[in-house]
Length: 74
Image (cartoon, rainbow, N blue to C red):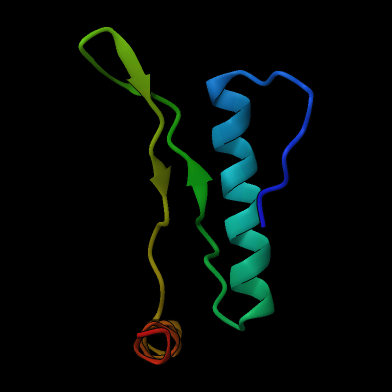
């Protein structure tokens, strides 16, 4: 869960926090993303940077677990 903080962060720091939170939640759910990372080159559109999160590749077992979790969330 993302918590409010009085600390001002850069967009890169916020994106890295999202990666960290996703990694932790995925691990807790039993769906690890071994290649999860912040894409090193943010994309720019209309002068604004957009950070992308690379979830990487997963094996079939992990894909099936993720599918089950997503279907249960509907």
